[in-house]
Length: 48
Image 1 (cartoon, rainbow, N blue to C red):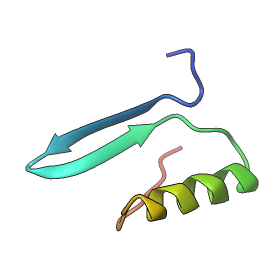
Image 2 (image 1 turned 45 degrees about the vertical axis):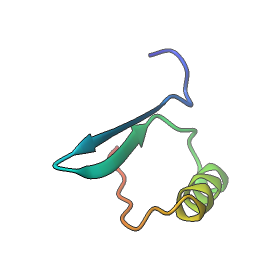
Image 3 (image 1 turned 120 degrees about the vertical axis):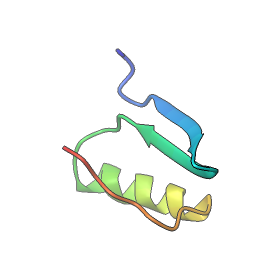
Image 4 (image 1 turned 90 degrees about the horizontal axis):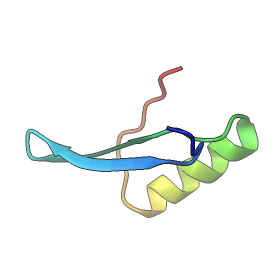
């Protein structure tokens, strides 16, 4: 996976899920969170 902005969307137990590799830093995190919430995300967690 060479693209640092790759996103994967799927389903698990009939629940829509999304995962990806995103840019590092607080400004990037804020941008990604705003976009996810605007798209309807209700639960967000981060794994480092």
